Length: 312
Picture 1: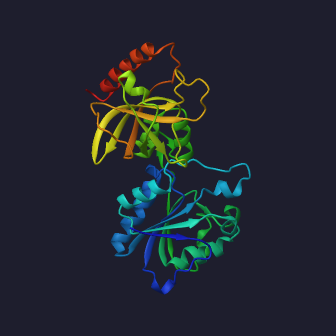
Picture 2 (picture 1 turned 180 degrees about the vertical axis):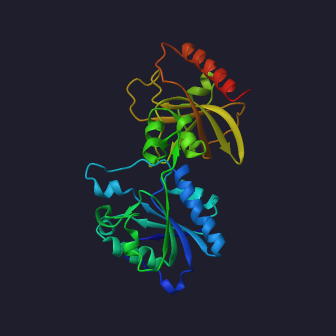
């Protein structure tokens, strides 16, 4: 997959670009609804012997358009989004920088520059996709702007149990710890990746050594608490339990969150290594225990419950 990071105006030359069929959208999470949009473009491109593309944006428009939004947490930060699209076998990824200048383009200016100007011959988007200043271009009026240079497929609302699958809903589920429901909408386990850093090594003293992870600050974290997880390291998958929280038993005044993972049946040094953590089930809230012994008893129960959950 070739990746192009574009600003307005971009410098790509139309005559040098291949005929392309593209999906377009922000696609945070690349959930089941997004996958249908993207796969439709890929399938159409194969059928017509053209290259497939995804046109996406960064940062989230709300960072630019809403004065009270300084930073957005993503279900799939840009790195993870690129990895997922590569796995889907997309040929080209265009990431357009969303800024004030882009937000002021008229629908026709946007189409001329980023659809016709990228040699897109067919465009696939969800029914609620909007473009141009204040979202005045949409899938109901897009035919007014094509200049007969490309055709369009609109993907209808994607529902699961009569509810629209959306990034907003998935964020709500993750923030309440409902990772099993979020995973259904995503079509896969929610995943975070992080680098193992040195922590207090308190878990080792408790008999439950943990890998402390430095997580991308752009990544959305699920609700604080204890989770059943799977850890992927060097293409091997391990079961484990993870904690998102402040370690209240030992650090009463701490505010910053840590992400720690106890990997079952694994004792090797992981400092500096990159781990991928799949979040499968919320087990319980983070608690403050009276002493280390109470915490150890609870961790033993957590491990027992999580091993049972994974069918061991």
